Image 1 (spheres, rainbow, N blue to C red):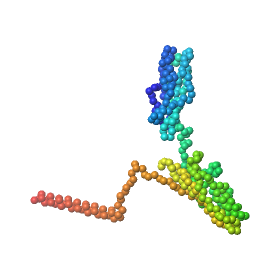
Image 2: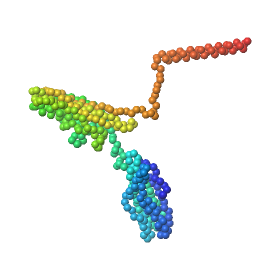
Image 3: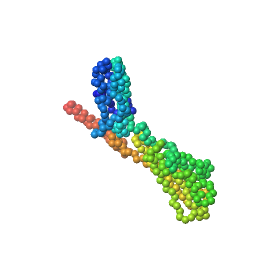
Length: 354
């Protein structure tokens, strides 16, 4: 019990071992003080602690207070039967806190032995290890925006089948899907303000999103990116239907996204959003074409090839006649060798005949 250490940390692993305490309980009456160190877990270690990092210790917090063993008649009460240690570790693998829980039992002296169980459980300091993981956006997933503090999918105008603009005809803005729509604003306005309001209602709906979710299921403030809005510059002077109205005719969404995380398992995240309006001077009686376009731009910066992975350095002959010239040289060398061996053989034979 005193010499068996706990194993190395294993995430979500449970370790336990049993320590049989074989004693003759009939002798407890005479040796109760000696056996109390075995029966009570904190007899030898009244203030246990863990060495987390050099020059730093973490105290083990008991979950409650436990009484010491007491011998009443032929029953030994408050005997330690189970000890459970819970060690919490951070994302970097350091132990940040520790606690211990003890279960007590009553043992009769007539029992020949008992079993004490010790266990060590490692768990992350956060509630769940996956709760902090920021999942990326999947292609075709609706993009979420914040409108006056409320998170809702961003809707863009789609127009009616006959090509006429409609405020109620809208569709979700989907991740990585570029879009270009145009329709005819069939509306007769009484003044410039009414025409301007109707054009903005078709292009952006009730309002432009203030923030856009960078990841799937964004909750923290760091998971949202602010939307940059470039609106039309106001015109000087009074506007009227006779002189012309300064109204928006197009709205452009530009969304920057990149892949973040591990190369083996990248996550798609939106890094920036810009909304741009374009305006023109039109008469109240005119029927302008309003345009909405959505563009996704990838800004991923891919890492360089690791040094441990060799880069091929091919050296191939790029000369078209290289194979033919090599073949000719090979044939010529073979002919010279045959001639040389034949001449040597002739000289040797002539010397033998002489």
